[in-house]
Length: 320
Image 1 (cartoon, rainbow, N blue to C red):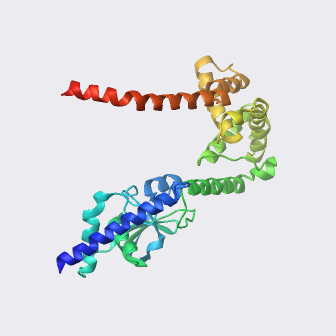
Image 2 (cartoon, rainbow, N blue to C red; image 1 turned 120 degrees about the vertical axis):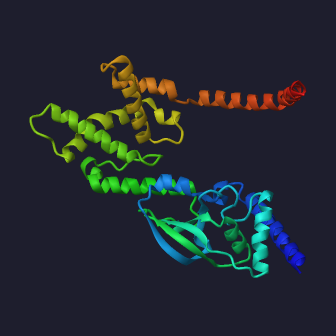
């Protein structure tokens, strides 16, 4: 009887692998939808606070969206992506057939969804068998942003950026003071940098005055005398077209950093205008340069395919 159950469990794994393959093929146009989320990548974006132990709970399987360490081994539906998972997977499935009790899995909760700490195979088998929930030992990580099943890492990143913008605008009254709603970035964490820029600007303005200017005045002064001139230069030079996927606010941050480096190298007299032009020349990508880069990449791949095998065989002979 045990051999019969093992045969059934082995067939279950084969069906799971087939489903995973079909889902992978069906998701070729947007492979990120098929990927299990990495807990470390999510924590890097959300920067959660403290951890609270929540005890053992019955957790809906549809809310388990990622893994701490095995996110490459399973797809978004926890179907196995590799044949080397067979042995462990079959043994878990066999335990269900023979009614052997299994311990609770261990999960992290963050933003309303769950990530596996221990028990990835058990989640995979449970989902394949059509279960709706599993008992789990849960620890919760405090996060401001709510997540939802099906969210990709890129969607999460955009959600974090939108959240950071909303908080920055609310806490500083930036929109009311400047009338600008276009302070937008392509990466999280930039609004903290902007606030630091404002505080540095406030410090230098205060050095030239007898009294300290309020934060509202510093924000408007920074916007008028620092940020806006750089954004105008970016527009006049057409830099955005040379930096695909970036925003004007992104380029402002990059140019200021580049300017600081040049001032350290060449002295405080190095102008912002020169830094802007230099940044464009050093890092910008024109259509011609992107074409040349693409052509070089294609030729290198072609050369590797044509010359690589012969070179590889020669190396093997030398090693022998």
